[in-house]
Image (cartoon, rainbow, N blue to C red):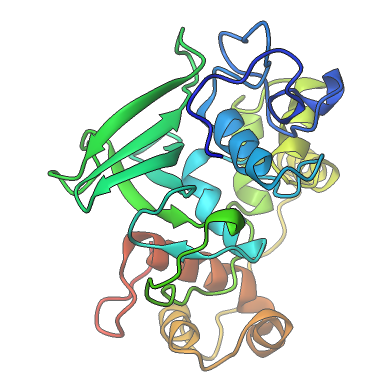
Length: 281
């Protein structure tokens, strides 16, 4: 049954592994005295989604920034839809430095009204259920947030809904170079906090730290030579499906794979997936 009340003490889906629970998410702020991944929208949505499956462990590690839930879900084999359904995780993307927002749909009143259970980082309330209307095309949130989609829960599958929109095989949401620059800028804190946060977000701490050391020592690798096909053309062909998925795509793109896949993901995030509007971000 979809949760409509706050999780309480002893519910391991909302307690970090380090404290005897199942969750791989970071602590909330202010940290709830009963469930320490609250207050945090990611901690609640990840916990609530896995709690519905009731497997006695966290099967789906949705422990990244809220706006990146879509890529993490796709990588885990989950289905993404454009319309809401009971049990779905609703995903908003944040503008600029905002990390987005997520919640769980507990009721679909009609095509323009849903009720969402949620939590929020920095919020004094660890849990609440709010009614959201889609009059502004963002399911009620401000212009700082745009809707990305709905992640279907296996226990609440759609019976008559259309087939999900095809999506490409994702790469990690950030490259090692991007993470290293953020570490140098202080966005991931100092060790051991940095190691814990990067690991919990699904990144390889040792690779990131090694790149940080290289950058600080001035040992920056030479850029790859200009490819025979420009990156934009490769991105367009990849979205069209010319290079397949997974290992086949990696082999076909070779040294261009990381940059091309990054641009493919960005185009999907911005909805620019037609041949005539695909671009480099």
